[in-house]
Length: 60
Image (cartoon, rainbow, N blue to C red; front, top):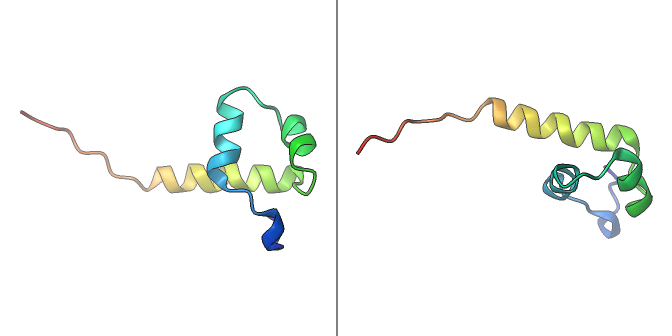
């Protein structure tokens, strides 16, 4: 993503907008400093982070 502090968009915002139906084109219109590669990198980052989470069953 853009290194300029004026243009900080979190992975969370990108994932949430996509979850609500935004397309890559929508994101590029809303955040013109983002490239398609930036958006794909955010998605990949989120996937990699989730891949390393541990899930524990809760027993009562």
